Image (cartoon, rainbow, N blue to C red; front, top):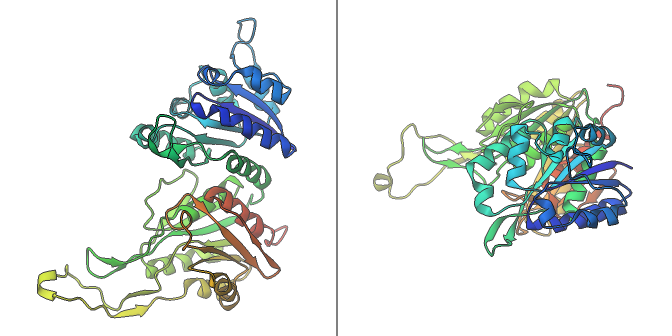
Length: 398
């Protein structure tokens, strides 16, 4: 199995790193711990050492107080680095490229996958400086395991809680399993929700945030793919190394997809495309007082996914079915067959806390040879499982 380097930074959530280490060990991985000075104020190094059976890294210079190469040795010896919890201070130092402590020095020398699981007060998480630092790290390929919402250590309630250790462990394993599996492949992803104009300020749309498509694109890039994203009204940071094409309406998305599809190997159509649009958009803003009541004449939009699937040559095509209620799974199965898809990803958007705008999802991946139902997990982990299934269908040697 893999050798995992677990970085622990300061914060009350440091105690959860013990659970994360034990989970990774139970799954067969070797775990070495590196701690910041602040982390040692919450959990002692001897706890991690006793449970891991390994020395714990705490000092950049070593016991003899002289420069050494321990940070390089640690970087060479491990397959993946995960920092959990990642405090606002540690995230800032990683983003700035500082090497003034062992954990940060190892990060600078680490040329394999790096994941971070932030944990901090809501105000710190929402501060523009933290947001900028997170965007910087994401742009360099660092995978973020988002914090969850709930009761915080100081009594506040909000986003900032460390993701559950099982979720972090799942993300680690998904990253290890997927490394390099899409090298040399061209992946096309659609994300977000289309908006069909009623007039210059109003539109018919949906609640899709684009998070699922963004997660698929980032995961594909981490696996070595050349990734293009067709973005429909997505207000999320753009990542370095991914090409973006803006496609706000269904018609624009259709045109962009037709242009990009012939050159791709894998299409993942995660965007929520409006089923209907106004037959005619008004040139000027509708005056509520003058109109009184507003009646819209709606016409159907094109079935972009079915059109692309019918035109494919060698591509693997994956669709999404955001359904509502118990009958949705059967509808998703029918959509896969009717549209001619290799895979369709079903989720029930009637369940609280998953789907549109949420950090988590609960999906069933349906293919011709069967289906896999996955319990609730972060969208990053869902993306890895979707790509596992899709990559298995790609022709070998292409």
